[in-house]
Image (cartoon, rainbow, N blue to C red):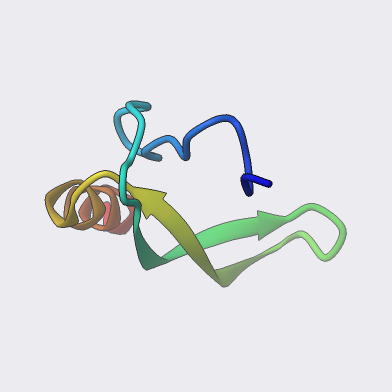
Length: 61
């Protein structure tokens, strides 16, 4: 059987990523329970290395 019927979509542009490029994105998130910011790491799929780099840069502000 196939792993999934729907293709993985790029986090940045939303187009199908075939094959997906997974990149660890580091950014800041807010914890509403502790009411503090913390550093978050996520492994997200992208259609190209360029989109992965642009997403990381946009998270750095």
